Length: 87
Image 1 (cartoon, one colour):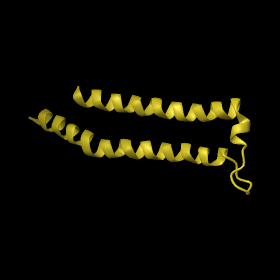
Image 2 (cartoon, one colour):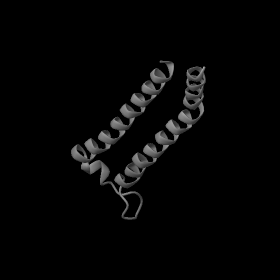
Image 3 (tube, rainbow, N blue to C red):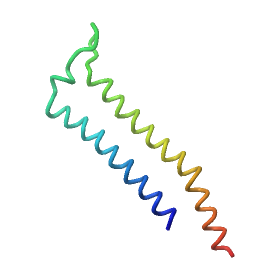
Image 4 (tube, rainbow, N blue to C red):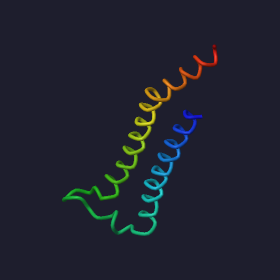
């Protein structure tokens, strides 16, 4: 039960964070195109590009965080459960 509670809490927290970031970016595209269309420097790159890349980097980061937690904390709890089940 502890394993399930911890894993579900983290999973839902990361899910909500990802939904906020992703739909925030989509809402920004839908409602404030002028903000995202601002050029950066003298080139053709607009502000929307690095923000979009940040969304992708955020996704990879939270997946990495979940995997690290799963491999350290959750695998230890799972091993204890299996050890107790074999008894």
